[in-house]
Image (cartoon, rainbow, N blue to C red):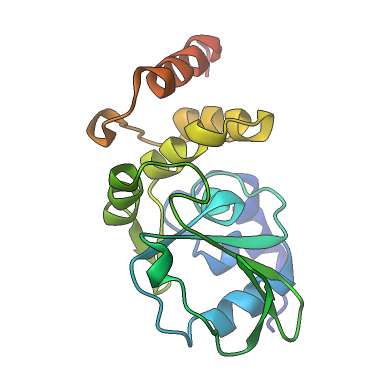
Length: 187
């Protein structure tokens, strides 16, 4: 693996202006290694979500796994080259032991039509489907942990986010509007 120069690392201090690749957005080098091996698998109807996807768009944050949303449970592969089945919904990279979470809409309580929209609106980055900023916000509205709320705020501040096409319930729209109200006006 190539060592990063100080110039490369400076890209990590800011939101992505389009000049940072997915690989350059990764803080933990083991994630890069696992992601490199993941590309040899023929994944379908999926997109990367979670901390890794977030780190592509905004100032990267620490994440130690790869979260992949599949459209349907039947799209989740039974085997991944260079990975072993770690538990029912996860694989472990053979070399680095990085975990790859394989998620379906039912597993994370996201309606199928919304998961489909998240995947359809994903961006292809370094040959991977990465949830768009809007798709990431929508995915995080359902779990809505403190970290999710901070991530949503960060995405709203740094990216163009439009959740109007996602057919969200009033509950998720209220959560989103509450976060918007809490964002300081000077940002």
